[in-house]
Amino acid sequence: MRDLKECRVDIDSIDQELLKLLKKRLEVAQDIASYKIEHNQGIVDKVRENSKLEKLIKEGQKLGISSMMVNDIFKNIMAHTVSFEQSYILEQANLKKLERDTSIAYLGKQIGTYSHLAATKFTENFVGKVRMDGCDSFSEIIEKVEDSQCEFAILPIENSSSGSINEVLDLISTTKATMTGEVFLPIDHSILGLKDLPLEEISDIYSHPQPIAQCSTFIQKKLSHAKIHYTSSTSDAMAQVAALQNPKAVAIASKDSGQFFNLVSLQTDIANHKNNYTRFVVFSMTPIVVPQNLSAKTSMIFSVKKYEPGSLIKVLNIFKENGINLLKLNSRPKESASGEIWEEIFFADVLANLDSPQMQNIISKLNDLTTYLKILGCYLSLDHSSAKI
Image 1: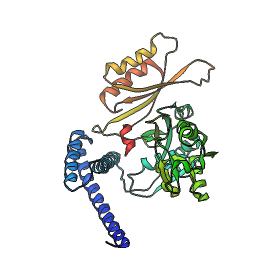
Image 2: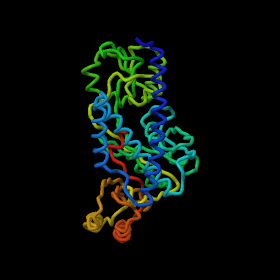
Image 3: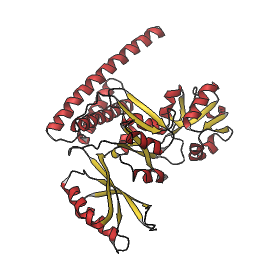
Image 4: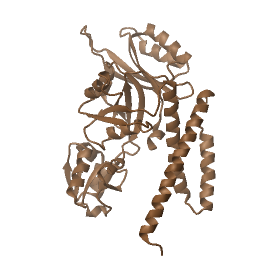
């Protein structure tokens, strides 16, 4: 039998080789992205991805590697590669480089919050130094960008279970910054502790009131015997559990945050509602150009003629006539200096590139059909699958 220390040395050596191979893979991905820029080709090729996965799974089976392991590992590698290629093409189109320092403002002063994870995810492809600026409020986040203290600001705008965050909608309607990106983050409430142990041995639970409420069913069924301690944030909960050094005390937070506090996941996905996502939007003082070979979204706000019957229908029909999909439409009360009440302002997400002929045609017609129109920004369009990277 081999010595354990010797085995671990070999594992470390193999992992180092894997990292070098991943680096080589990204270098090839950069060449692929350059080719796609030159030939105006799209990034995602699902047919090739599925075919490649099937071949890799068969090769893995020949080597005695489980199909699930091969599938999980290479799906994540492919997802990260696509993200890298998209970021590279986007930066090239805007005459920038991924190999540069940047900064991003997010909500919260501590690491490990969902906003911190979203900020980390958005900046994951930057090769240079990334400065993270935690803020106490949504308005402070936007101010950091408007005052050129940070290049980017990231804000949670909606949740798949609880809907839009109205405070953020009101804030972005008046900002001077431009929307330049989005991030979908799974809200995967998990039980985190110092070490793995049976749930019945847990004596204390630490978390923010919101995750406690969102996981009430699991707590009632599995952890009703444990004492609940409310904290100011999920990060504060993890910090307290780490400091207590009590193996029977746990935190409820994102499983991806446990790494920041040396906590392990005892149970994942314990929320009452599964498949829960929060969508974050990114702002910058510099608008971006999204190449036509990448999927793009355009976000805007507008008001319609209040006393004209069918005014909103006329606006919506313009999108239909041009074959453009309106992904989301929210309304909020509009503040008016004239004292007019019951006026609405509409927030719309459109699956289209602002520079496309169809969108330019739509904008020209909307100018006549709306009393107010503001383009919030055009940016790379993502979907829920990108959140699973």
